Image 1 (cartoon, rainbow, N blue to C red):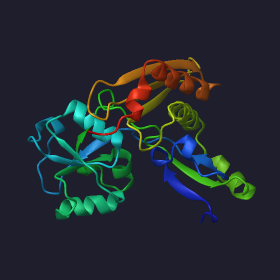
Image 2 (image 1 turned 135 degrees about the vertical axis):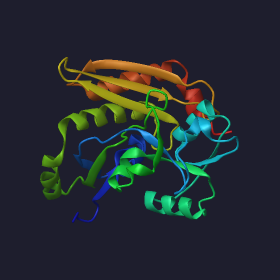
Image 3 (image 1 turned 90 degrees about the vertical axis):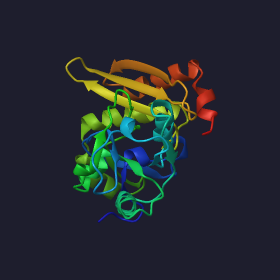
Image 4 (image 1 turned 120 degrees about the vertical axis):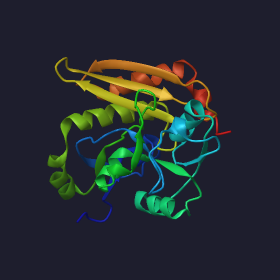
Length: 246
């Protein structure tokens, strides 16, 4: 049981680095799971892909990133904001009370619930870029709670920590957070001793995104992430970051 002030969270749902609660730190980073998103249909519906759904189909999501991707890649569909944890959303979707016809969910979350079979379509991350921190569970605690910190530290998966540091640095450079229409995804080449960060800022209205990539040493993941974010800002990302949904 965590002491007061501690919590277990999905890294993709953490506040942006500039919006973090003072005095709280990430003590443990668990091994990364799948980063992909999935389309989920009501129970009993035959499987279908986003491209196969009829025009006007309402797709539930609370993430501006997913809504922007829907507008860009599947303009015949209608993104609709939804709230609640994964269990609540799935139950409401099946009961017909969620107010949508289908929803987008994290595949990692479905797997942790033992519900991976609910994925009607697993979305290609090359076309549907993942959120910063996707598939990563972290444990936070108070900075001044050194006992808890020392107990949690051995749980950290070092390669995943590198990935998260790179992705969060890019997000910080963009002054973004979990409600930003952006994607950051880092990969490691341990044989070459390098980390690569792919960053994308999406147009909330569904226009063309801006993309960047940066590669550098494993010893400096945050610096590599900052370079990816700076490249986006140098190419006009601020305009998209400041834009709201249509």
